[in-house]
Length: 147
Image (cartoon, rainbow, N blue to C red; front, side, top):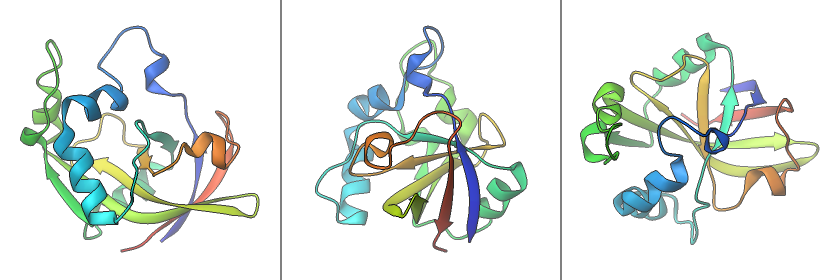
């Protein structure tokens, strides 16, 4: 399934709010291990690329069979954010590719059963996608989710 998305602000730039994915990966080494084992990647960049797509696109993706299903209650968040994983219920990961300017990178797209925003999807990769694909906030990319 192909769709267009816009690069969105990095949540780690916020001064308040829940911890970034970089911190969550450090607190939950099992997440890193599951992703590396399932994808066969040697590395996992600590952090995600935030993508904004039409909420109908994210709903369509969520209806696909996930490559990885991660129970929300298996993910630790520090206080006062410990309820986030319960609120999200489950995390769904989908194999795919992001394309930009003749370049592409394999990724794992992730959304939650109950996402924080209906138009948000995140991308994990073995590399820093902003650098490799020369991305800035507001840039458009083409995404392909493999179902």
